[in-house]
Length: 301
Ligand SMILES: [Cu+2]
Image 1: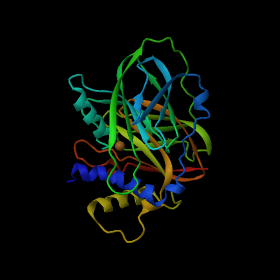
Image 2 (image 1 turned 120 degrees about the vertical axis):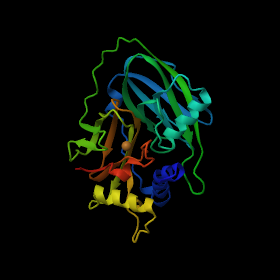
Image 3 (image 1 turned 60 degrees about the vertical axis):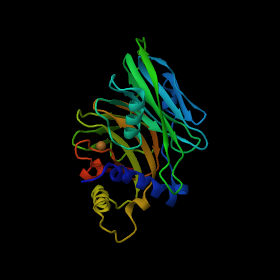
Image 4 (image 1 turned 30 degrees about the vertical axis):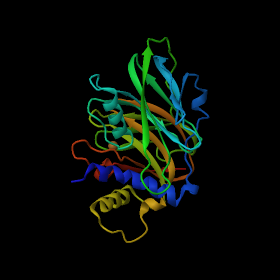
């Protein structure tokens, strides 16, 4: 029932609302004080109109990936494998449909990634890659500042992960965020302790790819309220009062992960109430997962 353009617009409209209504209040939770000390091999990925740079090889095992844009451009990254028969132009088009349009593509595996939190700020995450051939799907874009949706520029850069001798231990995570085929996020523990902590984010399903978009919300807002609001918005029901999303604040983001994939990120949340929301589209129905209940509220104290 939803056209693709309309549906991908739903997540965009949230960010547009946030970006224009409360940009100065946005307080992203990204942090790197623990994760930067784990001693993993480091991969620096940058993307801007000046060019895209990403390492061509990594050793198998844990890597610390740091993504940066520039002072005018945000950057987005996902580590991917895509069907060998795709030519580069088609692959880039499909990478954009997933990264900017929230529509996972058939035959692709999304290992995970990030988006820079604020202009000029880098974002770091950890990932454990097995030997093989991958691509960095890297894009940059000017953040929304009114008018048309900004254009995103996508690049695919090959990455070979070689047999390594890396035997480093997995990051010790204080918080786990499990993503399930039942369209659930399971945050453990709840409440989450305030302060910087490593989060282990795993898609334990097999059928669906998901991302994680975390907003701060007013304390009395429930997951059901949020699901109801997005359903009302999509059905064209006028909203009587100020939209809930206008009261959302900044939080955190992790990029698309296919079933079985894990990433580690570090977040430092202020005490309060938060909601994890998925705007990814179900390829069969075209519906964003948020409409079918993929919202979980949790507390930080
Ligand atoms: Cu989802």
